[in-house]
Image (cartoon, rainbow, N blue to C red; front, top):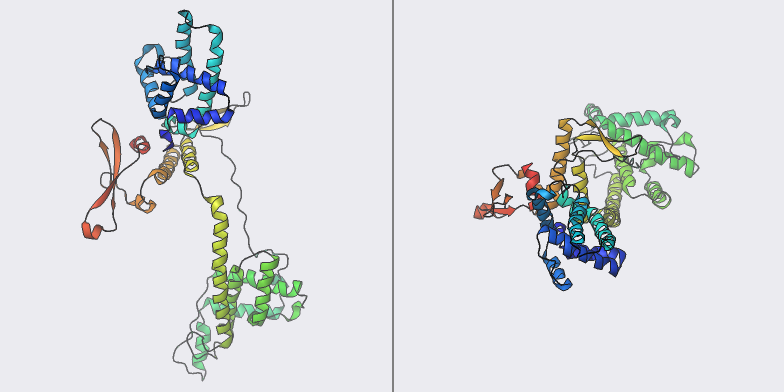
Length: 448
């Protein structure tokens, strides 16, 4: 985890941001003679090489623990700000305390203080902005909600409102009546036509299979048919007086429309597949009394439409794969970005709403949030945090039961941690569950 970075790693990363050897030298001296020495490390007499070796093994987390211990146990530092709340001020005040003692004792000139303090302050302020420190120093319960950004509205693509569509109000009366009969046929899965067939001389072994459609699906069919007929009239230049549903059974016409949409509208085969499904339904309606098979396989136009649909479905799957390949690099998040999201979600667990002060322009607290809202925010934060840091598959998270499959333990040093037990794929053979120790970062959150 990034929170286990060593002090030297953070210094090296910071040095790369400014590439100033003199500034780096001042920082090392300030840390070695005043900050680390003040935290209890015997670093004053160390040579720079020895201090670098110590920094390469000393973890950022250990530095925080030393600062917390010093703040609690030493009365002289009890008035300093808490390290986890204000690292910059705590470390600078610690530096001032020990440097000023050196000046008083005559071992250091006051005029040199600015150089060391400036380098230390710049490193500390940079560190406080990094994700490494935020994970270590985040408050258990944030106080004020961060400013909320307006969510961008998603862009919706639909055939509705297409400029070339022939709206139902523009349909000739014969087409409107024809479509009304087709809708009734699809609403009742052909039961009305089946009753007519039983009363006629047509003898069948079984009733042809027609799937009933919902009102929302039929409403979408109106949009798709309107777009197709609009293309036929407004783009190809045909008269609207003689359009009918049988146009959807002309295979070449459907292919030309699908090609036009792909070439000129930059669409996929998805709407073409929907159009074929509608055409198959119309063909079933028109040939309901002619077919002698339940699946209409003896109707030539339906078989041709089905073959075309199978071909376009393959094309559509390839288009989806290509689309995912293009979009995935834009959607994939690094683990550092995921941890940044976790920290943002924790900030949303704050006890108060925030607002901008009219006079100072600062973000301050205002109304208190309802406890149930805070709890819901916390659950969201904790669940996402588990997904980010849990060393097992996500689908097993829902199986964790406190006290049974997830429990708290304490090691020999008195350090608490959580364990989870997971059923392995060979559980039916071995009857043994796998036990995982959860990352330390989750311990305090689960305790809370």
